[in-house]
Length: 325
Image 1 (cartoon, rainbow, N blue to C red):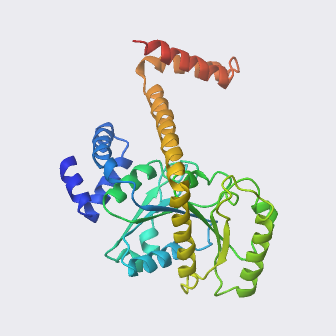
Image 2: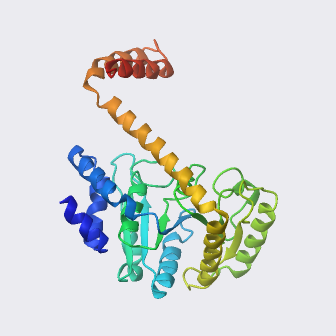
Image 3: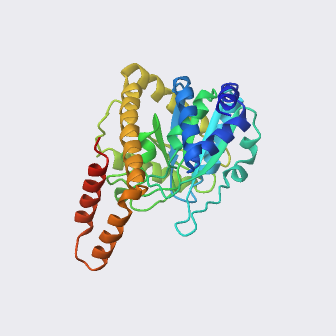
């Protein structure tokens, strides 16, 4: 199965790519083992695409913008993959996964691949296996990857640590610009795009001006590329070409100055530590030898006889003791 998927992915087989992403998202032990082998085989075939994160508040038009940009790029013979993340219900764990229905025109393009994935409760607006999904679509030859996050919040910054360029869509007349510009998503954005120029032309112009003024008081760590604030109408597909020009300028300068290489090195280190943390947590939770200890600690917690911090330290101590060689 793995060898067959491997060969078909390298041939840009979209059905095989979909099956492979389903495999890596599976929580079954046997599927995890298969997905690890597949990622290992494909990893060295990845890393050559341009990764773009797209975030913004609900209703700002992220899907419409991504479809417009995707169509613009596929018309220029680029292969585009969209990894869209849908919020998962905390109660049922389910997601709607309706991005293909919102991007009907792009979804039928030969050079486009759209994959909605559940967030699975992950913070940061991304799915748990977004990084692995990027490896797969890159190995399949997709040159531009667009990652759509679930929405904006102070935690919606994880995607910025997975991509080369981070783009945030804004609503016209979006209120207190200084509040929006505080530590968080706006500060780390490379491009701010005020959408819906077709409906609110004057408001869009004013919002662009407000954000430019607000950004002038912020100094980014990497000050070689000034955050751009632009306007567009994703619905009418105006301003898309200008935005792509900025992205190309960023890529060109980033490669020349070494930003992208440096950023990806840091991202790989973070991926390693994140994966270690998740795997360690799962190993502890699934350790049968610790079940009785868990139950004792839960009873103590309920009686306020022990603090959660102390309980977690005891669990780690027992896990370490049980795993000494």
